[in-house]
Image 1: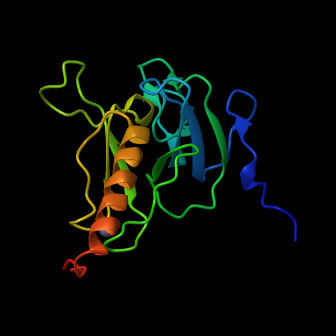
Image 2: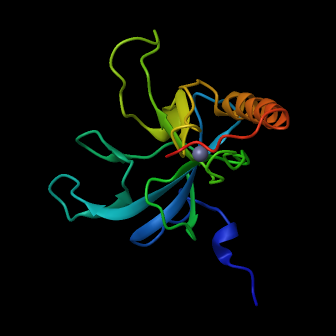
Length: 172
Ligand SMILES: [Zn+2]
């Protein structure tokens, strides 16, 4: 069996994918050195008076042309979830309560940390949280790597604690 070509990234500047769901690799602006991986559609969009053009769903239309993030790469996805997001290389441990892999979420907060949360671009996300069950939900943290570190520590403490007292399986 040959390896799926989904492991290879293509520079968007060199070649564009066909319409459909793709995985996208985007340099993060809020986590320097990290890459955000998202699943998003390559789809037709209106672009001024000309014919519709193919472009990723997270593009930006300024009234004249379509913009995509610098350094954008893509590959045919094996993922099923549209809008699934992760930080490249960052694994999230299974929840010790529901034993599921949590889902990473992010959003963009204003620089002063107050006010309205903007559902912005994934490469600008500066507030992150994980969800699975009620017991495994995390607070919003500005660095998902730190989030995972704290979470694993908390799991280790909970496991230690459960060796001393009978574990109470939480109810969903
Ligand atoms: Zn859970």
